[in-house]
Image 1 (cartoon, rainbow, N blue to C red):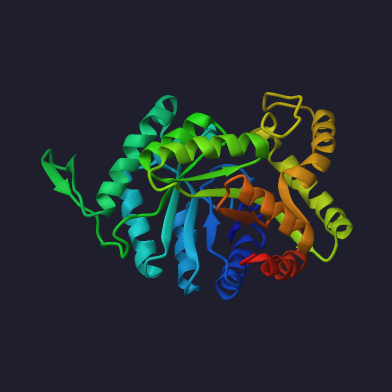
Image 2: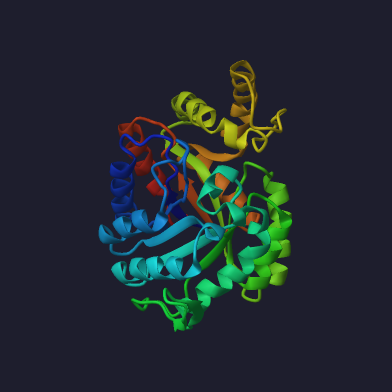
Length: 333
């Protein structure tokens, strides 16, 4: 089981300092990768509007760890631009770049490209194919500024012959099947699915993937000396973290009685209180080293290859860094 770090902070105060400190720690302690997302126009994940920018920063302060986007919302962008940016990250990192692509789900993100929102899911496979072709040295015909038609290619040339690719899934089986048919990895989470449900989808994915594929699971994570202490430490920041994102994910949380994004404050408090215990127990990586080792074994048995540990959910910086030292004991187990 590989372990990576995943950043998706709801606070901009120290997000980037923590990102770079965490990246150096991951590089020194055998973690597989560092993931940063693409988020727009909302405090939830707001410090990360462009994973190529944060990825380049991670690449510059590390030597070994993978540098990955989790995820590029590809329908918002020209594939040419995405291939260019990540080729630079690949050059800076000397061949450590990797990208998860997502179709996007939040309509407000698409103020950047409003006409693409209705067709974002159907367009994703072709857009991924174009990025991968450009990465391999292919060209694409485009109109230029004076009405001509030119074939353009990407510079600089990346180090890796092929870009490592994942598709991000919120739990839809069709997305797992798409990733299998395209021969790419899956990046997913447990907000919208149980581990048993995920196991079934992974089995279907591996039936379709010629090389068996790679499944990365994002989990909110805090590892500490004992289970009770971890739970007590995580409860308040996780409550704030979920509250900050409630208008985005109210209908996605396990056991949520709400299926729209507009809830009152009292309803929000009820919702968070109802799901938090289950979230800490079943939908994250929380507890002592032995407890989390057992969780990782269950995930491996379900077919997960890598856990991307989301660590920046609002703990004080000192507690987050302390948690990393305990988490590092799980690397290689």
